[in-house]
Image (cartoon, rainbow, N blue to C red; front, side, top):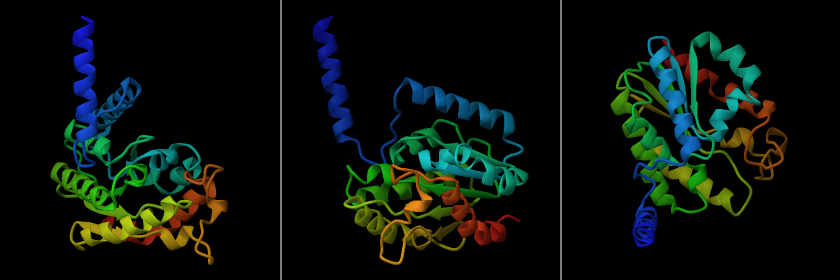
Length: 227
């Protein structure tokens, strides 16, 4: 029995070591429960969802620090949040392939993903993962207009990689069903550093003012596509 467990552990480690940002991967039991709740959200509201936000904890934060902004600007548009804290591209791809977005027909989908890959993957591999995320979302929701957001500024040494990633993924814009929008300058000060007054103390997640800036930055594009 012990030998079997050891072999299973070795195989699991090898699988994880060989995975890429475009290979769908689930996470732990708590994450799977969150995934199940989002499946239920889709089941209950699939005919109502007109605006969908997809991403990691920064997107999930619309339900926290961004709650008031969401209630004012997005709830009236029948918006639904599909952000899960800690997610990387491979986790979102798993969620897409496992029915979170099945039968949804939102007018607009807003995607921001990749910042959690920055510390451990190459820029090229992360861009590949973002590309696959976009492709998978459009495969499930072919009628949606997808707004691809650049990742936000972070403190160095990760900040430079974030900017490099944005340079690559903005090429996915085709002005047909994928629309690139870069919020970098909205979150960067004149000296090229983060506007820390838009972030909480970890300088990664946003405070309420940060969500106000996000909404203001994307409003014109969302309004244009939300027809």
